[in-house]
Image (cartoon, rainbow, N blue to C red; front, side):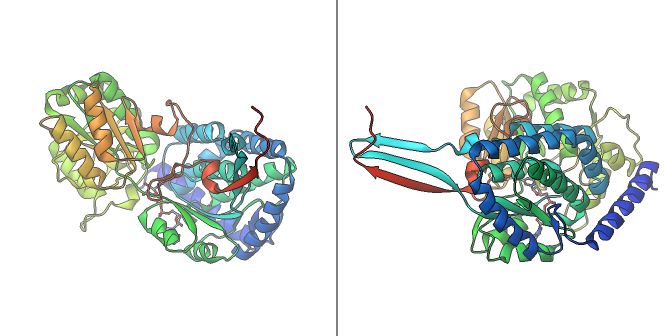
Length: 465
Ligand code: NAD
């Protein structure tokens, strides 16, 4: 039966979608949102040229205005995102947006390099690509938009977004807000843009548009493959299935807290979040005990785990998308369980062949697999990561164990002794990115990713030592 919250969400969603339809019938304006992809791209081409006429200092001011707007609008956009998409948690969206607004690098990321020697001076500069076409996901619409907007403009580009159709109102509102900030800071109108009704058709038009110089896809494997087949320079940020491996040398309490926090942030929809735990048998009981002691996890019996699996995995072995990103209370209600509001994640012991060990569930239901020793744990961790080369986590105090797993799993992000999100800069060192380019190898993207590298050589002069 529908809960009160679900009924209200459905009603709000209907109103939001009607609002978009109504706006779409209005004419294109200086809001950054256009009737057609062609209009958005043509405007972006002109805007990008104008951006290059501004100083780098001015570009920095534009970025500061976008960051400020992202923070000022955070509560509104986070609430809208949760309501419209039905995914994630409001308080975690707030953290996501603060992270992206504050830890996405700006123009400092494109600082030039220089070589000087007997033959003079060579300068290597990071030049813009031009107009970027960016496809953004339903899972983190606002974080990705903040992060991509800052990175792409910092590199001197314009960007036309084709957001996920089911996150369109949130995305359009975010793009409009950033567009306003850009123009108020003296930037050119149309530097970022989108269309009123993003669809798979408009995505195709964007991908194929002759004036789009670079494509960036943040999403599942299919969309990454689409941009890779485009014949254009493309950055693909795809799916993962991050394992968290725990060995007998780990600080088990710390591992338990980290896994509960990392796997439950935004109801597990971050591509980096722990999707299964692999623990050495000798410490498995302690790990589960400490996870429960956090007060944020509940342990399912084997029977409950079987029932919930039939709910969240379809008969043909796929994730039931209706439960992606939902609160654990909503999921477990399906099997007649009522949980307190503090619970953020359900955990259960699973066999190696359990579907949730292999599927990217993106919901707060976490399988825990016991293995005999660390060698087995590492080997199985590599298997379940399935060559995505995305993210892996290890809890251990043994340098050789950590080195062995990192070498074998070959992921873009490898987090040791902390929650997975430390790897994207939340409570870990380094900048953030919500476009983690594993398939194409750029890693955590930043301004420099969205550039062309150019070299300028002056022969026999300007060596000053
Ligand atoms: P999705 O692939 O369904 O959608 C992503 C974007 O691609 C959307 O804008 C969508 O409209 C577009 N799209 C999808 N199929 C397309 C096609 N055939 N042609 C053109 N455009 C297409 O992904 P999602 O459900 O929004 O996001 C969740 C997935 O994304 C998960 O697998 C998650 O791991 C992954 N993800 C990866 C990263 C990363 O940085 N690597 C970040 C966020 C999400």
